[in-house]
Amino acid sequence: MLANESGVPLDDLQALQEGLRLDQADRMIENVAGVHALPLGIGLNFVVNGKDVLVPMVVEEPSVVAGASFMAKLAREGGGFRTQAPDPVMIGQMQVLDLSDLHNARDIILANSEDLLAEAGKIDPVLSSLGGGPRGLEVRIIEESPIGGFLVLHLLYDVRDAMGANAVNTACERLAPEVEQLTGGRVHLRILSNLADRRIARAACTIPLRVLAFEEFSAEEVRDGVIEAWAFAAADPYRAATHNKGIMNGVDAVVIATGNDWRAVEAGAHAYAARSGRYTSLSNWGKDSDGNLVGELEMPMAVGIVGGATKVHPTAKASLKLMGVGTAGELAEVILAVGLAQNLAALRALATEGIQRGHMGLHARQVATAAGAMGDEVEHLAAELVKQRAVRIDRAEEILKEWRKNG
Ligand code: NAD
Image 1 (cartoon, protein in one colour):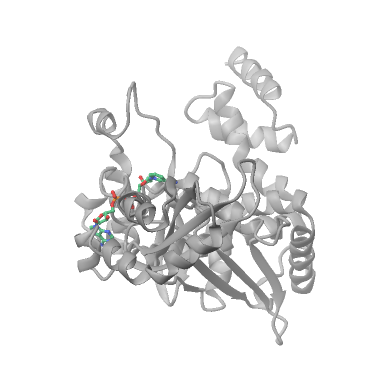
Image 2 (cartoon, helix red, strand yellow):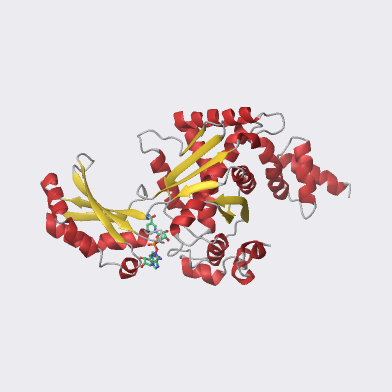
């Protein structure tokens, strides 16, 4: 079905089901003893900048894929997700120590920035030939730290379709001797920053008021309930952490499916959420002049379609093919759309029927399996647990024991 829907040849999608082989895993990391599999589901109904996208999502938690797909369906009624990703500029940091005059050292670097950038432009010919490479230098003075003051040099580096950590780290290491020579200081750390705030992707959606009503909830109640729930996260870090976790349920699922570094994306997300000095929501929800619900999400999105594991892990390759993304920016945009959809799924549930009602039905299958249910028993036992409003492993084991005793 996926091959038919997407037009991607079946052979190219086979890895979605076959996964990573042991010999492939053995070449990826060290001390390999096995392969750990997770479910890969397909996020449906996504329209991103007018284009239909089937979204592979790797996640162990029930109801994430269902929630995102359902909200994408509502967003589709309002034209889908409008997204943007800027030029993929990453930041590489150099920590310059042993300087007697920080301000003078900064002036020297800035006066020589053209030469330094020209030097940096020679480091990765592949990247340069693709239009990437150095974009600028910034110098920051850290006046106080546990070891006193020092200088931080930022190399802004366009990494095109890569996540860019290796590319940036290499560039910083290669540029460091030049910086030492110019300033007379000692370059200590040379490493990328995961606070990729030059690479902020955005997604927005409009959910028409008419599609928001369900069961006993009016459209206005749902809309206002979502906005009230968001306001809680905007004002309170305790709530914002959970609110953003919901966004990351969607974001990470696609980041993992495509073989990208989810720790890097997580680190960037939370650092960005705390950029004002107070941790807050990564998304915004409000209403437009027609009363429709409007959502926006913005966050750093350092992901690639080349480099890292993206071309090494067969499932990642198949996932990227299925999505049909042609650039790292396009991938970032789809990820933001999924994060926003997932955020709405959680807010809508919390603001109306509560998170457990929808979630428990799906969670019950996991509980039933954990209790030892096999084959058809899983669905039957899950339904029974929901009916009894006791989605707990002890109850599941009891019921299973009774059933088996009675044949
Ligand atoms: P990479 O070095 O494998 O690939 C990037 C290189 O691919 C570029 O330098 C370029 O030479 C080449 N290339 C070919 N075609 C390209 C294109 N169209 N666009 C861009 N480059 C192209 O990978 P990377 O993206 O530099 O690094 C990602 C890896 O680094 C991930 O595995 C990540 O886990 C890891 N890493 C992360 C951190 C961190 O986040 N702090 C630190 C170190 C390493």
